[in-house]
Image (tube, rainbow, N blue to C red; front, top):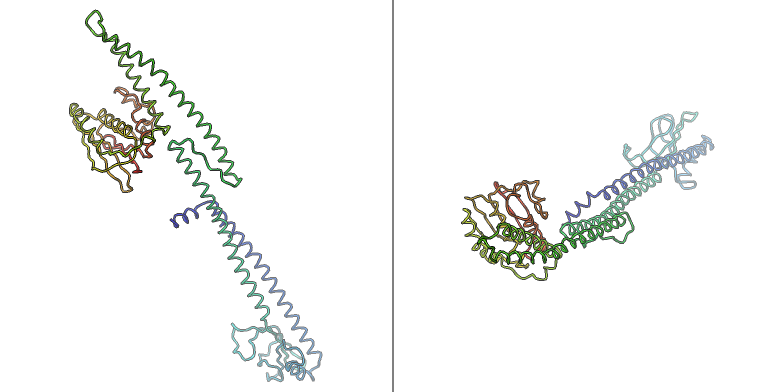
Length: 452
């Protein structure tokens, strides 16, 4: 779980922007520090060189006759002890001072402190050597510890500052990215619920007055408008179905009365029979529309009980098995006992009836319809209805779930185009998932129903 959150966090644009901004800021700080570091070191080195030059001038002002005694006095503590000295003759013999003899070269150099072997890694004395008129060599040195300490302090300070800058940038990026992901997850969840049919869901606004809040306000306003339109359309559909079902029922009763009475010729008038069939078809459509509207409103959830689906499947096999045999087909049901779930029993039976009738209607003679019910690994009940009919092309599978939609090949067979729409509504009422797949040949309808 933590790895998944970290993976999402690292891929968010906001986190990468903060990380990049922190890196750029740190690089700019590195550049500025480099300039300050070089300028400070150069300034301190110049100050050190001036101090050495001043000390050299002070010694030379004493004169060559008193030079050795002055050096000894200063080293003994009568003067400053910040400097190291060397006074040697032209043969390289030391006359005064604590530094070892050096090569006969005047100018600036770096030396090792007294008592250490000279090497290139431990030369911490800055020295100035002068050749005197009588051929002797005078050298004044001073350690660079202060400069080194300041340099080390600046390096450590920048290292800590560089690290803290990156950590603060990453922490800010992580915090804002997590906030962004929480807002995004809230929007995604609301959209998922809306796509599942719950049009009452709205995008959470959040406390911050930012772009997300403005976007959420506009999206919620759009959803309010869509819900109003859907409610209006549903009311129109339901109203038409309610208003027309009553006169159609009266018309059907009159047609039945007319068919039941004497017609004078001893024959049932064919137009009356056709009219009665058309009225029955219209009543079936209106009843299906009312049932779908009632299901989608969620009102049927109050009728949920524990339903034994294997028992209902076996009952339907007894009913539709002979019907399939009469048409030269076979209905095979595969299930195990004990697979129950809370649901609306009447609607679940209607869903199974629609699926079985649809499969038998489109399955040619000599084939079979297989109905299976098992428990999936996640605990859901998996219902499968597979036939060997013409199937449904992939580009049509989303459309056949719409109301009244029928493919061109199905228009020659009886039906209203509401069977799969009713199945989809029942599956949605039970928070299930409906999939249409190829059965090679034929159609495979798979439905996953959660156990609770």
